[in-house]
Every structure is written in C-alpha cells, then in structure tokens.
Length: 268
Image: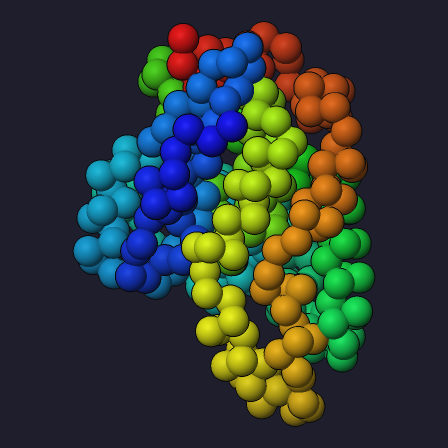
C-alpha cells in the first residue's frame, strides 16, 4: 500500500530524470517505510547548479551508481556538497576497459526488432541477481544502510543510466527486505511510465541510433529498452526468490544487519 501520492514522491528536476522517493509504502508488520531517505533516479551527469543545490538539501549520504565503467567514463556524475559516499558497480577485470556497456553493444550489433529487445531485457533481468558485480554492490549497499555512522536512516540514492532496470532491481530488493509487498514493488517500478514521457523521447532516440550505427532503427524496436513492463522486473524477482534468503545466503548479509536496516528505515 502506497502512503504517498505519485506527485508527492516524484521530483520534477530540470536536468535529472526519473527521480523519486521509493519509500512511503506499507512494510513489515504494517510499519511504514520512511520517506525522504530512499531515492532512485537516472544518471547525475547533467545536473544544473539549481538541481545540485536542491538534491544537496535531501541529505543523501550514499549514491549507488549501477552503471558500467564505460558509461561512467562518458557521463561522469556531478555531486552536491558535501560529497556523499559513492558505490560503483565493480566491472569484471576483463570488462573494465570495454568501450561500451553491454546494452550499448547489443543496440549496435544485435537489435533489429522489438522481439530482439524484449529478449535482451528478459535475459538481463534474469541474469542480474546472479551477477557477481551486482551481488557485491547490492551487499555493500545493505551494509552501508545498516552500519553508517548516522544512527538514523542514511539517505540513499540508487541510480543507473535511466533509473529503471538496474535501479529497479536494487530498489525492489531493498523494498522487499523492508516488507513491501510484491504488488507495491511492481507498482513503484512501473511509475517510470508516469515520471518519464517515453513516447516523447523514443522517436528522437531511434533517429540518433540510426545515424550512429548506420542502419535504420525503428522506435518500436527500442521501446522495450526504454520502457518498463512487470514481466521484466518479475524475472529479477523470481531470480532472487525469497528476499531474506537471497540476502543472507547469496549476498552473505547477516540477519542482524537486516534487523538494523529495518530498525532504521521502518517507522515505529
């Protein structure tokens, strides 16, 4: 059950997309997840001074950047002052020097139809919970949430490039561990369609990719990579299975750490 309206959780910044509060849901034992502590967004590379100032007022202590190294190199983040702690996705040694991220390589060489894109998205969501890099940054985030110096709930901002796929998976894990229902997790994930006017940007994006890759790419073919559908996140949720078991056995997060997170991020 959402305790916040969409308008109250969505932030309309000028230079950052898909920024919203993913707290404010009914959680474990009917306790509410705190608001103003858990945020999700697209990348932070184009922040204006005004948006930097406003984000600086949110008291964000940790930024979790789930992008791959080539994405971070091309679009380095800008941070408010004081600079928060930053966790970055740890690319495998053989991928650190890659020129493009995996989804960009797929776009260039393998995407021709919407079915191609749909299959890629299902595959990436299915694989994500089992990826060692994601497992590490997921675990590091949970440990920070429990062990940060501030005894209160640390402010956490999770982001990737668009703030929906990789971001959606980690946000779903955090929400699930706080007792948010699967229905609410999926509803929160689907809010990207309200926060971002995908139909407005997908045409120009298709034109840009067509010019970049020297072949015609139809807007309908890339929609699965720009949009969201419950089927995508369900693939990741099914891969994680029971959230607590996934956290304690796969991520090696102690039950006592989860208890601290719940104390800090649930009201009451």
